[in-house]
Length: 225
Image (cartoon, rainbow, N blue to C red):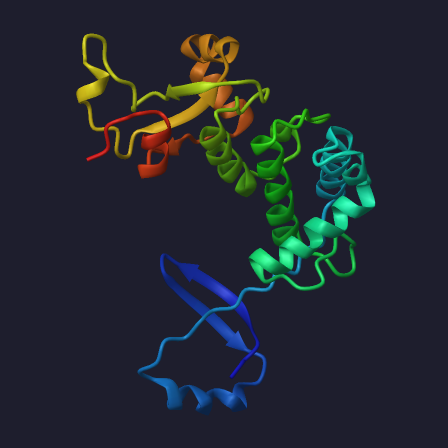
């Protein structure tokens, strides 16, 4: 059963929705003790920035010729990743067009492309942090940590503890619980920069840092208990 409506307000975990057909409210009486799923449809059109960045990433993947020259055709790559949107995210008939696409799905698509580029060390023609929307930056931060790539420039990186999560001088890192501490992946150059201008650079790039989970702890050999 699907009852379309309009979101009126949200306070914490409580949402208020006005149904398009109030006469169907009686349907709710049948499911008082059931779990209701809120299906959100993003009505925002794909932005030009999203579209341009997505096609730039597809072009970068094509130039890298991963799998051989036969795989270096942008149109073939686009079709393969469109298929992956259906296969892995259940988004059928994905599109980057104004009429059919939306911003949320476009962000998912862009992050999928970026994660592929990080995993296969694809050189990027555009810097991600200049082209991502704020909601997509957090996922990119995590992907950079998982692949040991600098979140700023994409070069080989190590982890950096951000303020409030730093391991104090004289403490043995091998004996400290890193659960919940926030990290970002930075190359040597940007690591040194963040030691002096961390607050300014975090604000400039809209970075939040990533709480250490079990996977990150394993990659960087951090205690997690």
